[in-house]
Length: 404
Image (cartoon, rainbow, N blue to C red; front, side, top):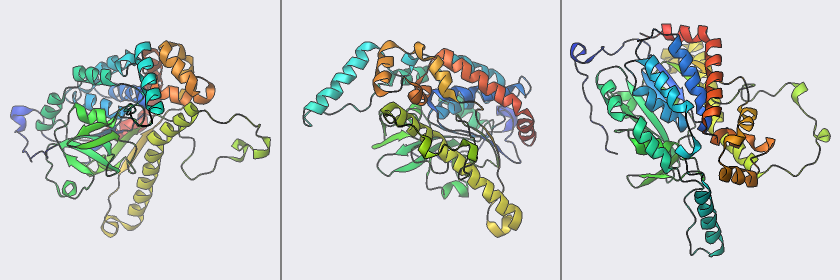
């Protein structure tokens, strides 16, 4: 991707509202697969707290994996936030698995035979690039994500920046591909992981390429995968792009801060644990996705909190830092049991594969909760997100009031 040359914003009278001044509000949407429907519900609550025709309140948006898709959709509706969120909700609540990856019997059988031939051919047959073929997702995004409108909103001052995060398989680094109205700032010039570019579908497909499940995406000779894999500081892209206050919407309940031991009542003594067959592959892979999508986010929120305490004690001049206010909203319920209730909506061939992997039992329902791109499941998660957002309405309103 060639870097985008600096451009000057057109005059406000001719093109729209002037760029806002003051503390910038940023939106951070981590990855989460099918669980990202929860983020749509929280955004629906945010939209309800604003006037009907209010523009996008977030000047900076950063998204990873499925969160990158929602970020691009939100950015394309920067002129009217609430109608835009309504369209995004309609898009998400009507999802079908076959619109994300091929899960029909023929595709599953073909993939299984390909893997088998690769195993028995002693290297003469190359294995498939992934378990699933996600070409339907590209076709879906091509119809619904309008990057031309994103560019217009950047030029007209309705949006300051959009970042899509991916992981470079060769360098093992997280890369933030971003588009912004003025990429010439000193902070951006010294941002080693940032790459100014003209965003497109390849960036979204790369950011959502969950390892093993979906194929990597080649851009300019480099292969990229899911942005959460090497993202050690998920809040960093939004902060580098100028956000000073952040709304972060996670997709996993947070019971206690990292490094804090659970209450003694929650600890099961090892001598009371009954022996069992051990975790299934589906259970292990679900655990890996859980860690991939959320542990880095929580660690970075705590890091920002410690920096804020340092700034408060020593002052910005002494530390070289500035305070970043963060409001983090995460689910109050576990999505695993919800996914299990909707397991019958999964196509039969995929249900068989999940059963073989051990993801069709209570131990493997975490994996199911990330793969269940189905309308009935999405609608329930959207409802949970909306309820959680309205329960935190005072914090959200305070955050919105602080923006220009």
